[in-house]
Image (cartoon, rainbow, N blue to C red; front, side, top):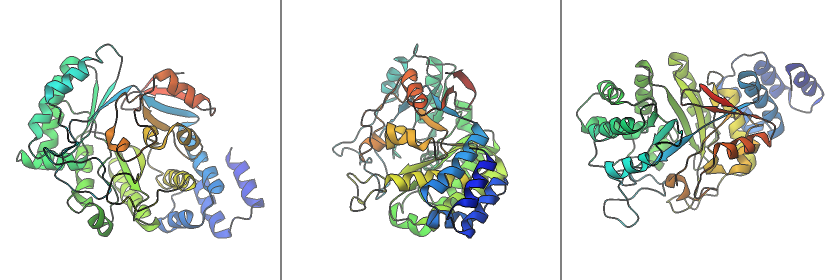
Length: 375
């Protein structure tokens, strides 16, 4: 749907004049304010928001829908933190805990030597005994096995701990890791930036200012990163907009965030299990508002193992243009919390079919969004 068609629909619609005014701001390619974004969350119906988000999505990325051939490695779920929303973390020697040695991980990696994967994604718990050099040497060994692989690894929370444990400043620690072969950083650990909410759900975790500082420092030394937001727990729309606004401001400065990933809170097996999960309508609204508000982010990602294949397909009409990748691992961080896909793995052709079924164009990419194959 082009701009003129949307303008004609708005003219005839029963949408409030206030929302119409903001919609015309969006169609003019101008930035909306946090207050206007908040109004979209509170008063925008799904059809209205989806129409605008899809317009922006197609303006930025046409019908292209990106994915990569990747694997996820989770070295350990042993963690020093006690986040209330987490179904994953365990203490050392606690039932259900695991810690893979470097040899265990390298054995897994060797199994993919001829599989054509382009990215290894490494995220896990904040292990009390593992420092920057442990993980740096792991990256170095991975690249000996797969020399052309991109290593996207470690949330800002993991980085904060391993860098401090090794006695480095953030800047010097990131330089060390880059020297070991770190190529990119995922967006996890952001949760919700609001300090009061953070104190209630993840008080021990690195604070929001430090999360943003680590990503900014990474950007300054040429390491691209992703950004995420955990939504659907005790936060409200104001907290979501504040989170998006802080990301947008940093992106104005650095331009090195590649994609934004809204992560749905799952309520199984954690200390917030009494909270009902968000509805499908709310999930799609969140994707749409994120796409509209984050005007300087090139991509919005739906993580298909978390929300399931069908919702992922729907999300492609609400601002989403990336659905992650082949995964080929259990991604227990989400499966243990009750995600839709308990053992996620799809071949490239299966992902391409998923995308084509909703009339989008599948594009296999690398970590940096260079297109490897257009289906």
